[in-house]
Amino acid sequence: MIVMKFGGTSVESRDAITRVTSIVKKYEERRPIVVVSAMGKTTNKLLAAAHEAAAGRRDQALTIVDELRGSHLTHGLALAGPAAADLDRFIRTHFEWLDELVKGLSVVGELSDRSKDAIASVGERLSSLVVSFAFRAAGMPTQHVDARRVILTDDRFTQAQVLFDETYAALQERVRPVAEHSVVVMGGFIGSTKDGITTTLGRGGSDYSAAIVGAGVNAEEIQIWTDVDGMLTADPRIMPGGHRVKSISFAEAAEMAFFGAKVLHPATVLPAVEKNIPVLILNSKRPEVDGTRITLDAAPCANPVKSISCKRDITIVNIRSTRMLMAHGFLRRIFEIFDRYETSVDMLSTSEVSVSLTLDNTENLNSIREEVRQFAEVTVEEKQAIVCLVGENIRHTPGIAGRAFQVLADKNIRMISQGASLLNLGFVIADKDLSSAVSALHKEFFSTLDPAVFA
Ligand code: ADP
Ligand code: ASP
Ligand code: MG
Image 1 (cartoon, rainbow, N blue to C red):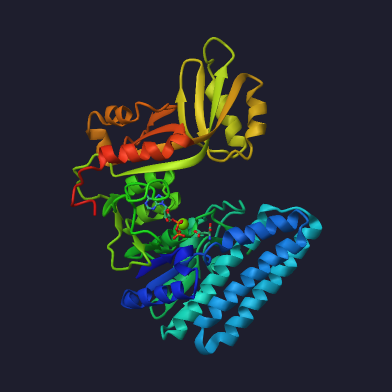
Image 2: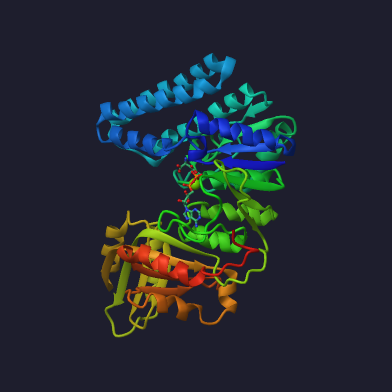
């Protein structure tokens, strides 16, 4: 049994879903369970509609919903063959419900996280239906499973935490037996509380769903099908032309994901590691490419660095003790405040009187700032970026930091950190320097390539 996850671009249109259908057909003997994202940019559009509605712009919200209805009908019905009338009914029912919800929000004028999840979930509920109809029309025995019946979570809406015991039990009971004889299709990203209230696992969470399903059914492999050839040596949005990394460890992949490699949701690795299930990253537009294989132990690599990750839109917060030295309990007080505002810190550096940290979520920064001001000075720097060199060999290779900072000698490097895991070297620079910094580092570390690891 294997899990095959297809991301938004892989199911964005009739043609894309036709490609997915032929890929899945090739794997039919391996008993695939297919997890899909919402079609294209549907999630963004659903959330935009929700915000418009809550801001009282009801007509704008309904227009967005209408466009989504149109595109789902156009692409979906073209794939459903003789069952098109059934799919038409399903799609229209979902959109009627959405119309009502949006109208309700525009009356209430506010948007709770619970309503956000209810609306955002429609993307995966629909895409999974459309894909299951397409598979059936192509002659594959197919069973649609509502992910909300098997992915059980707490009620932290928009960031729900998975209840693993309950979820694994439900997957064993409701998915594994069905997958023995049919291709199971389910939506990623969504789940529900034990009381049946819809939740989501956080943006980009379909990769995580796939890993949870894989671990729950004890799959042999988890395949993440996306729009790039695999994990690359650099983020293609910052520096095109990076090389494909053929083999990488779970620890390295997790570090890359955490520091911005959007190709993999950072939580994906956990369930896979726990059951030691290999994860493959593959390109649905170029299925003939071998992709990236993520396993417990990666192939030995002669290059010290495997990849350069980056994370944009980072804010640095500098907190300076108003006393001569940082008093006992100073850090605890600071982190207690960040914790209370559920704001996580990515990178940290301290000196005798100050601490600097980076945030990517600044939603609660004003409140945090007010509280910290009670006992320390606070300054904030926006438009920063984290750059992170990742590779297990970094710890065994002297001089990596020297080489990195040598090629960046003309740039202002703000914070430096070598993660406790010792497999990354990260620092912060101004966003305007990001692309030239990544190019310079890439040239330094990837001008010769170990052919066993890089394509
Ligand atoms: P999906 O919709 O399939 O989940 P995502 O957009 O979430 O796809 O992730 C794929 C994207 O991740 C790529 O198109 C690429 O721009 C981005 N990305 C960032 N860093 C990397 C990297 N190191 N290697 C490959 N892709 C990366
Ligand atoms: N559709 C969701 C999102 O856009 C989940 C995913 O695609 O992974 O965030
Ligand atoms: Mg993704």
